Length: 114
Length: 114
Image 1 (cartoon, each protein chain N blue to C red):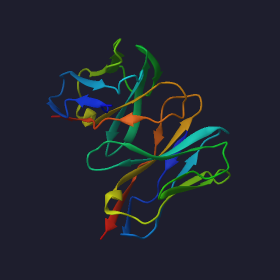
Image 2: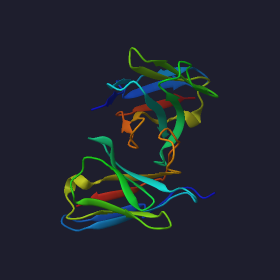
Image 3: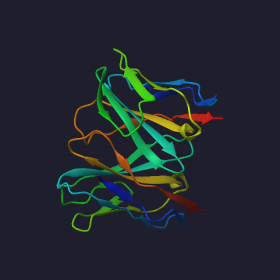
Image 4: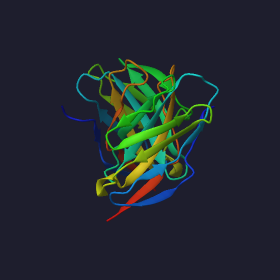
């Protein structure tokens, strides 16, 4: 089985722009979660989608949004980029069943905001 | 809110030796899950081991084992027979049984000396 695929791997944007990141989960997985990783704040949960519905949400401003398509692929969008949005964005997929289930992570998208 | 603390920013171990990484957490819940994740330079988070709070027996996965002390809210990871490939960032993580979000610690960078 192919693993979790995130595209692009690297992205450079300027303040005020918007960006869309993509995550393709493992085949058969219906849950996709997104995490932001920064040196200062560490790893923080953004949101989780299951069967095209947002099921959980972290404490991020409304500039951060996401969606999930019928094939379980997910996109994350950040509007009006700020310097502090520079981070590694990781997505993880799972079947979406038990809460202790194993999450499979992608290699992330490194976003730099100039 | 739940918090996870890793007090060792960096650790070093000789190849074939044993090392223990520390983690403490704070929660008012009685049932929850704990995890150790490894993040190598590839940036992909990999699950090392997980523990259900209701289980008294400590989890073991090959060379990796945990010391789970529920009353003390401590969850340490022991790596036996350390290998060069064990060098990575290690994150301790917590999850409520009713939520999908992981709360991560700040991480411990493990170096393995040949």
